[in-house]
Image (tube, rainbow, N blue to C red; front, top):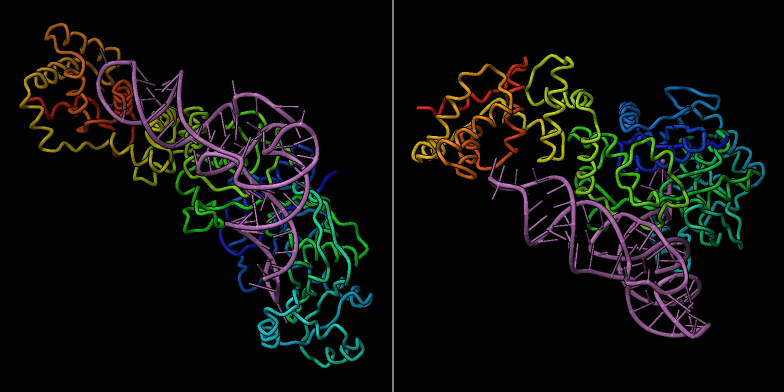
Length: 489
RNA sequence: GGCCCUAUCGUCUAGGGGUUAGGACAGGUGAUUCUCAGUCAUCAGACCGGGGUUCGAUUCCCCGUAGGGCUACCA
């Protein structure tokens, strides 16, 4: 059974790029009935925060990613936080030191920094002379036992190549002489990334590492560590990066980047999931709108593209609309309710109301892409502003006055809600009796009803307000009659 | 600077030694006769450059160029 892992750092909000990596892991493993591990890489004590970890879990769950082992669900290979796995790293470090694959480094950060500056431009690609590499181990041990601060570096073997097969990129190889000896254990006793991943992936029996391309170069060092530990490295699949419109790594200045932001703006998780999966992967056919189940079914690592992809907010919006339309009215009503409440509406969440809300939201999705925008648009149902110009314009026009007063008279006799078929009858009658038709007929009705020159199709809008007006929603939906009253003098 | 990765319409991509290089988003036009939107129809739009290999390269190879990544006691 194949085991993959997603290993985020709890150092902030979940970035869509990382979410995409998680998604590809998830899709790959679900299609194969494998196991997905969530591991928290919190070795950066400065930046890691517990609350970020909590957000991380909720955000990933919101998106629809599921894992079989992790800090919240447990598993046989825990603990699943690196901060709780200190013993694993300490033991491995000792093994490497004993095997002469690692050594203590007593250089201070200042010394290292200075050395780096001095070596710029010189023929030393590693940027570090590895002064401590040949220190006598007995003496080093003594210094450490006397309390001297020391980091542990991995001894990169010289004059050879490291290579590995990447499922996305093919064979990749590096010259070891170009690699410096990486710190694997900081002087604080906390392991460094390139080391902790290897140790954890070994002990968690990970056999496929799907991660971002930013880790590609570091993989060389990691493979060397696997070798030193006499372990077979896992397979690798390095995903290309997600970029902003200016072709730089996607960041805040390009717009929203965190799952939380997309959620708050009113993107459906299914839509974001769908869009993210299409960034750097394609199902092979021309389908663009896919559900999670379809994605799991058709996902294939072989179809992942090698080149970086620019995040297209416009297409995401379009996909969001498509997913809104995929939902049942009542389901959409359910999902959409929090956004309506956030916009100041109060109502009971009963099936009748939720269905009306969903139906209405779906119509409004023709005009807006996001649930927040749609919630905002709902305000036009409970509030109308007629500018003095509109009112005057309707009164000054003979035809407009005729249309409105007849329409008002027509519906005044009827009980709420007025069926749309009745409205059609009334307008037909007005046309027959007055000869007013087309734009002359419908435009005044629109203006009198909404106060606006353009907007939702009347055949959608009228049923919407009539049906909504009898529902217990606060503020209440204003029906036709109340809207027309204002103009009927 | 060094090393690694990448390169098809504006964007996401399909394709692959001989194709009218396909689709989607965005854009243009037309239809739907209340408008905007939506919908439908339709148009425009791409193989980074130079060398090879080959009867033939967008496709394979090399070089260049451009972009990205790594080169941390960040991940």
